[in-house]
Amino acid sequence: MTDRRLLLVHAHPDDESIGTGATMARYVAEGAHVTLVTCTLGEEGEVIPEHLAHLAADRDDALGPYRIGELAAACEALGVRDHRFLGGPGRWRDSGMMGVASNERPGAFWQADLDEAAGELVEVIREVRPQVLVTYDANGFYGHPDHIQAHRVSRRAFELAADPGFGEGEPWQIAKLYHTAAARSVLRRTAEALRETKSGFLVEDVDDMPFGSPDEAITTEIDARPWVGAKLAALRAHATQVTVREPWFALSNGIGQEALGVEHYVLAIGVPGPSMPGAPVEAGGLGEPHNRENDLFAGIH
Ligand SMILES: CC(=O)N[C@H]1[C@@H](O[C@@H]2[C@H](O)[C@H](O)[C@@H](O)[C@H](O)[C@H]2O)O[C@H](CO)[C@@H](O)[C@@H]1O
Ligand SMILES: [Zn+2]
Image (tube, rainbow, N blue to C red; front, side):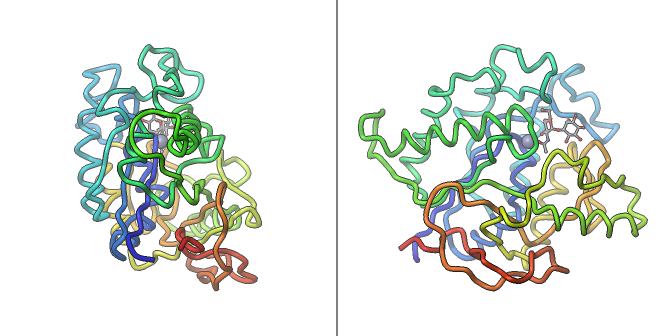
């Protein structure tokens, strides 16, 4: 299929690299048009480097503009040239982790009017006309309010973009909508491997992780191992949020994760493509029997 167009909707600067960085770099390298929409500037994030601690929301409140630069550098590393902030930079603010006071702040993404935010995304969808949309599941992958809201806005925009009675511009029907996913067997294997290293990162038991899917729920395995270097460079670009000790990385909580070149997804809407051989288990694949797609555009003609 020529003229492939992939749209990814992520909540904060850093999510694109953490969950889909290798996939994005692969599709760019293969000639697809990759569009990234980020819903907030990540204003409420913690700051890892001591010399940048002043940027935090409870000090200079300058982390959002700084993370715009981090995201630009990450997109450069991935080869992604089409990046937008939903509604423009700063339209909606990072809500903070579930339950904190900033969830209630006026302008927080968690407080966004669903149809207003979805309307902004419909404009991008009708302009780009992607065949494939990637975002989070209904739990936002790990329960963060901005991730949950990104899911809700994406699903609403998926519907509205195809509705001839909604808004301006030609309606556009996206063919396939995916949720990002992490297979529990991969999480378990990488946690065991991390335990054997001297990375200095903390190890979290799989059962304690706020994310993870049963292997059988995974529909799609993208083998982008040749682009894991681009993913690591993009993670390094998010230096306020991520510490990289290759092949491992950790967020400000210090819990180690492996930067894998194989990334998993669940097809939420659309017709799956044919089952294809997967990546080896030692590379982060799910091994055999492989009843999964190996291309987000599989089955689209
Ligand atoms: C990956 C992701 O979604 N990061 C978010 C998240 O950051 C986490 C948060 O600060 C938490 O308190 C830490 O323990 C954890 O290590 C961080 O990854 O939430 C931030 C605030 O909403 C957000 O800016 C960041 O991008
Ligand atoms: Zn996030």
